[in-house]
Image (cartoon, rainbow, N blue to C red; front, side):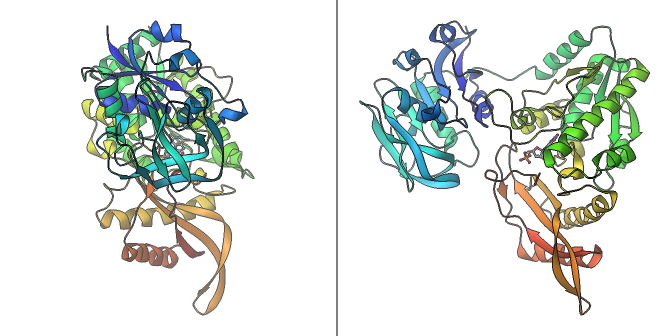
Length: 508
Ligand code: XMP
């Protein structure tokens, strides 16, 4: 029987990332609800060699989700992360309370006992934290293994029971030795062997699409990004001429986008229909300022356009390139909703198409591996992620054709300058945002009360966490000068220096 690690989901943003990191270690991993019983764990479809309790947005002392206490009896090794760490303390008789200030982002922890999951780490480690509650008393029989400036019990353990808790997130890329912690747990403590491989994903996905569509017909939503292009190629391989790709130009694309997509897909066998829907999207967005409302309306309208095309060609299925982070950030189950990704929770409740999402469990970098396997060109594989609602979520406040055009011009300058500097492959995303406020400037000796634009450039591996890019000042100066010279009405350019968390990558 396959052996592996079961991740218990307490609603954390990074829960799925934990399972994915374990798979990166060539060990099988699945996610189960946090309230799973011990009997269910023992009868899972694989041999569970260890449990990892995820983080989560709740408070243990305010009736947050809990664990079957029998899973903490020492029969299976357990690692609790963030909320999972607090839950172990709470259930086994320790104490958790509300911190006076939270810890969000990178911070230093001091390791006073480097054993168990902390074996091989340094005395001082740079880690990623995202919490307000904290453990203030450990359960009987446990030892305190690490602390930080504002968290006296940042890690604890009971070697006899093989139960470990850490307040920080080893699964996110910004915890420098996070993988070492997971390796210690998986290999040294749970004694797993690195034998599992993520192979045959493409064949599995093609089979799945073929089976669901049967003898029917489908459309695939194509934006030209790596996710939708990969989904489109999988759909084409599965269905050949029974699938048609639909590119909806909602008027919220970046400069040159529709042309680039056309160029990429010409002569590839897959038929692509281009729909110019810009005026209907702008009419619908008139007067709408709330970011979630924008996302919901755009998601709805996309589907209405797809339904119309599907009706024309008698298709019953809509294939989309939704990936895992889109789903987790849109909020399912216990996970707090961050923002509605237009292709997930943005879908209308009633729709006449059955949705198929072949990439639903993958992260962006995993999709890029699949895209490479499918032979997609480098330009698509390395393309910057671009949100489905397009520039609408980068125009804060009301979305009008004039404001979108102003942003489009600004964004083009940002892209050109960063590409000229040779930095584009190092930076995950770089773009401009138009703020919904004005600021005083002086141009040609007279006062101008103009627009404010922000530049956002972030480095990331999977979009779940990100760091702002330390762009050279000279480059920022060139960008700012070009924008204020070339884009009429802009009087101020600012640079966004916040990581994710606490910010998100997009401003809305
Ligand atoms: P945030 O802003 O949530 O973004 O940190 C994470 C990543 O997702 C992209 N994004 C979207 N992608 N539909 C998409 O397909 C959406 O509605 C959407 N919203 C954000 C964002 O550009 C970043 O790469």
